[in-house]
Image 1: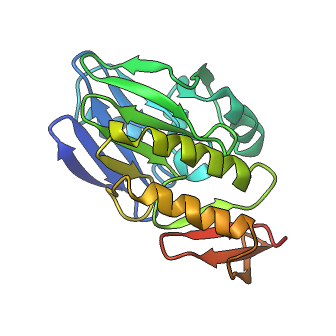
Image 2: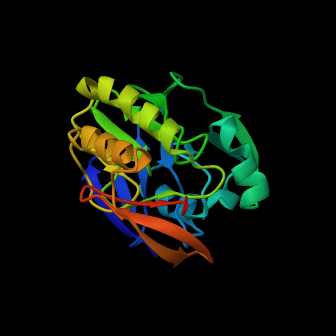
Length: 230
């Protein structure tokens, strides 16, 4: 059972411990951003907080973000996540495709979709335009950023963050799915510098075993990057 914390009268965070997800209310409908890892009744919990029609959006399709997806027949998601969702993690239901720059309006609460490929091909962030918040999923955070395996790519990640940095005048706070929350937009150039140092071979890492495979862990201060050994 996640702990539920109000961010304001229209917004809540659901804290599972290792991962969090969010509920946003507009005037006409409500939106869950992700649905947890161990939680299987996120819809029920959200409907205890809002009487508006409820929809679901996934920032990406890793297992720790789709725990309650089975409660929904349709989920907003980048189509680039379909392989990860259906083949990788046994996802169900229909994908309602989201593209970079799309706007979901909950009713006097427009949400702009920002593509952030790198952590996964279809990772997205959600810009809460009116309240100047960014719900970033996994790419922007102070915790462990998974960058190992075939679907994750550091060069794409760096390009995504540079584009996000150019948009940073549009938000005052960032609400990640992991670790400290909220964080300031000043974290973005720090993450860029850290990722560039790793790609250039200027960072020291250590080889560990994680998730049944060897990985290379880089503690860069601002966050830890878990990468392929090479």
